[in-house]
Image (cartoon, rainbow, N blue to C red; front, side, top):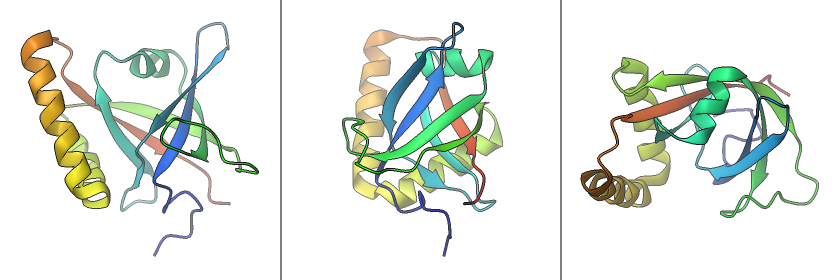
Length: 135
């Protein structure tokens, strides 16, 4: 059983930073990995991926599905790294998300697959591995 306060959060507000330092927050699913870090999957061409390639700093807070931070939610600051879909660590993160979110994750995957057929993005999938200090 994890001791990190975010391990059981269903949604978190994940904040990355633009080149000018402005924060940008989005709600994401968030699963703890065996080594104590956290991860989630995303599109390889997403803005959060682009921002993380320039600045690995992140802020994470417990939130609702829309990214609204819960009153009194602790701000957890850390760093994140982009993991390409061909990297074996991508599958580890994907498995952790699938285990935590089950059927909902599978439905999102199916939706993403259908959108991929229409959109034809060459970026592929990516995962984000987040390192947060233990509080």
